[in-house]
Every structure is written in structure tokens, then in C-alpha cells.
Length: 144
Image (cartoon, rainbow, N blue to C red; front, top):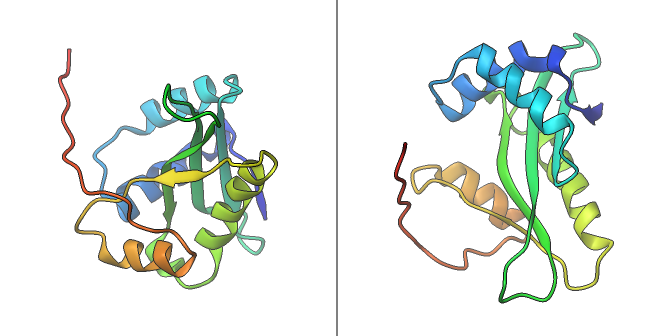
């Protein structure tokens, strides 16, 4: 079942972030971010819950994406992750299709995403769903 993410999902989401994306993050931070994003209409944060166990096995986080050079806004997938043992069960595809449905309501809209270069299985997954690699870029950050 796909539904809106809640703060109660934080432990499962934290587990997915660590096991699937290999992010070093704290569970308390995950919970506080879920709370903050819940109130932001420019973000969509959904989970896929296993009907048998009630545990979250995947999630997607997308934000509205607007630029000065494109007349139409789209959605930027910030994270899409599924527990590795659940890969191949259609969970990622189902989560991504919800975001695509949002985008499809506006002619010319789009869904975009980034995927780290070493995640070749993810690249194959996205290409299988019709996504095209449109550029290669470097990622720069300056933390304060």
C-alpha cells in the first residue's frame, strides 16, 4: 500500500536510508525532517507499506522543480529507495508512478532525478521505465 509518510515511519525510513542508499544519518534527524516536510506543499513524501507486516519497505521524496529557463514546473525526485530484499517486486516502479501521475496533470511537465554513478542497477531500472540520461555533471557543495 502506498500512502503519505508519517513521523511514525521514521525508524523504517532510517533503516532504508542506511541499508539501501548507505547514508550515514541519525534516526532523530529523519523524524524531524519528516515532520518539517509534512507541512510543505512543494514536497511529496510517500511510503510503500508491506500489507503483511505493516513495515515500510520503500519510500519516495520529490519536490516541485522550477527554473528560470523552463516555462513548466516539474518534479525532482530527491530520493527513491527500497529495501534490497524487496527489489524486483514493483515497489520502486509503483512509488515513481505516483509522482509521474502528479506530473502528468500539467502538460509539458516532467519528472527528473539524479543517480550516483556507481548505482548501475538503479540506472538500468530508470532506463527500463523510460527515463533517459540527459547529462553527466559533478556535484559541488560548500557546508556552513
